[in-house]
Length: 289
Image 1 (cartoon, rainbow, N blue to C red):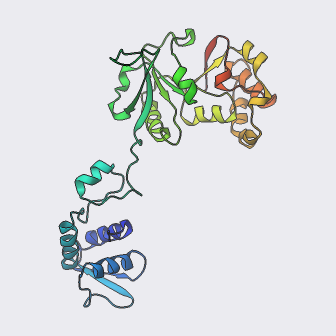
Image 2 (image 1 turned 60 degrees about the vertical axis):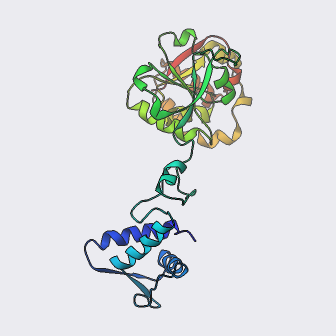
């Protein structure tokens, strides 16, 4: 029987209290009963410390618990497995805590780079790599481009007239259940650089909200003339209607001459939008502020 994580957390708290006093008494509930069951299983005698209402802890008891943990090659008290990767947990001992470990993709993102020839691999217009965000030197990139849809990400090229002013932009998939956490961390780190962050995704209520939530500074869109002719109510899902309030406030704060005003007016007043895969015409970068 592994030492349950809530029992470990409780014992770690007791260890801190024992730095200030010789003994600590805890009521018999939740994690304490987990400790009692674990001690009984491992033949640790609690007779002089336990009654029907409480368990008394002292340094001698914690030393016995640590002896059992050490003999079973399990991390001793004071070392939390929470938030560690599986490999980091393995260095602490043989115990694995899947419920609290860091996801293997927690810091990883999909990035699109210029093509790099690889022996045995057919050449592609862009090279897609799964990378750890800690390995990215953000100062090497002039702008961050987050692409919402995976199919659009695989086809996306930053070599557009609207992006010509950005040298070596960092093109990243915004992510889903697999990569969303890594992108959120990257977006937070990028925001601190105060450099351009361009959102390339659906122009609907959800898409614009995602752009704002990620602190994007610009959104990549078809020109307003093409957009006016091609945007459609079919690309504004009814389930997104309740979420329009925030965007209406954003629209109200914009001057009529702001380039974003025309787009949001069509979206919110005419209920017309366009999914990223249907974009056409010449693209433009529109400020979000």
